[in-house]
Length: 227
Picture 1 (tube, one colour):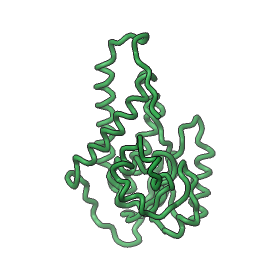
Picture 2 (cartoon, one colour):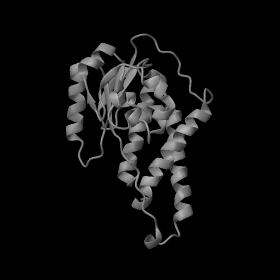
Picture 3 (tube, helix red, strand yellow):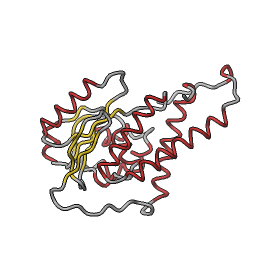
Picture 4 (cartoon, helix red, strand yellow):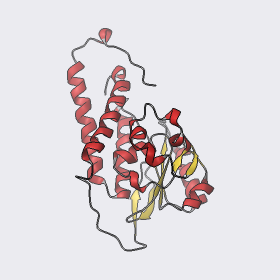
C-alpha cells in the first residue's frame, strides 16, 4: 500500500502526466477496431459486476459522475462524447483538471446532460440518445445503492449504463476499483490495450516515487494538500 502522505501528490502528478502522455501520443499508437455491423451488441461486465449489453462499436457516449470524463480522456475516447456535465462549461472549474484544460474548447460547446458529480438529467440524456452511458461513483465500502442507481438510470433512459467506482490510489482495494473502471470503459470502446498502457504507466510512476522516497523517515515526510 502506498503511503497516505504520498497519495495526494501522486494523484496530481499521475493525472497531469497521463494527459501529457495523451498529447504526446497524438494520432499514433491508437487502436483500430474492426467495424461491426449495425445493431451488433456484446455483453460486458462493468466495475460492479453487472452484465450490460452494449453496442459492439459505440459511436457516442456520455459520462456522469466525478472523474468519469477524466478516465475516458485517459483512454483517448474523448471524440465519442456527445454531452457533458455543467462543470465542463465553467471556466472557474477548469483549474486542477489537466484533461479539462486540454479539451476545454471541445467540451464547452457540447450539450448539457446535467449537473456535475453525477447529478445527470435523464431527459437530457435521452434527447442526445448516446449509445452508452458511463457512470462513475465515489469510493464506498458498499456499492449496493450505486448498483440500484445505475439500474434505475438504465431503466429510465433505455440506454445501457456501464457503472464503476472511481477508486483511488489510497489503498490496494481502491486502486483495484480504479483499474476495474478503466478496463470496463476500455472494453466498451475497444481501447483495452490503451487501458493496460495507462495502468502500467500508473504502476511504474508509483514505483518510481516510492523508490525515491522510501528511505525518508515518516517523521520527515512532507504533507501536501491537493485542492
